[in-house]
Image (cartoon, rainbow, N blue to C red):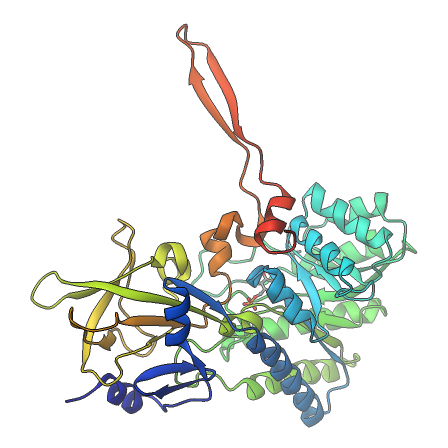
Length: 466
Ligand SMILES: Cc1ncc(COP(=O)(O)O)c(C=O)c1O
């Protein structure tokens, strides 16, 4: 009989640094998951904090060795992009590693204030303010700058944004500019809506930044939606970006830094997928080569890794409630949760995570489909990264314990997309809701059901306030 354990060991290099099996039960970072499940029940979302710190340290080390090997002249700094997970315990863990912060909306500035009040963010921490700036966001950025957060830096997302800072900033202010990258060829749009057109960057600097003694353009930023991948698209966008940096650097001596965004990928299969040190060294080599060709100093580099920082720290565990054979071949294992509501990327983006049984490793394996509890026919998971199938141990009604299945590396974005407790992507609030009705005489009435979600309510959900 081929057991589930045989299947996994023959398919992958198993055990791994992260996963092993003891008495037919799975250990994740040596943690007895079955004991946790028995203590807390399922569905269960786990956040393993040491992984956040170790990921930050790994990336810093890859940059350190890459800089050493390539003789790169600039410095490297790590920023955490809060949108990947805004929870207080995540941000606090990341900050233990001396990271800077990237923000995406004005609600994020509440997090900066809360962390500053606790002494975890200082006025020297870089606050890289990305995203489209609403009036509230510009107001909060300006307030931080005027309050002495000397490295709070608006990253201009559109040409008019700087007008607000002209009118309201009192202190010296470093400014960044995000360049709008071209999307991957198969995307529906040619150029990203986020950032400033390449052709507008130089005029914007010359017309609105250069002559104001309060402002210094210090950072050029870009973000590639597909992430840092060894594809011709990635390398050509990086090269185009570095050439633009060189062009601007020649007329703007204060421009010392580039921010190459997020997008360092995580493992979504047990099989090792990425050669991170190679990718990072290659990024450094590319920047260095272009700067040498153009006779421009190599810039300091910032990254703002979100998924890489927090993704691998998360796990989501379900019980298998029952099985249903819906025709001769299709066997469904029903979980006590939902893919759409707990792991929305699996449904919306066809994202795969590492999926493993927690128990029953000595049992025969079966090809199954996993079904969620919602009524939506799309609420299923039936393919892994390496094959278009899913296998789990067989189960019997007489089994002493239910079968449990774990999804690993689920720590980024899933809560904000699924609206955990009421938070949303980039902390964009739930809108004010108004109910419209008609009186008997046909007159329209409007009644406020709920005001727009407040920053305080988000801060409570995220654990910053009790
Ligand atoms: C501007 C910017 N920086 C960083 C990130 C983080 O990307 P990732 O989580 O892939 O590292 C994003 C994600 O959307 C982004 O838009």
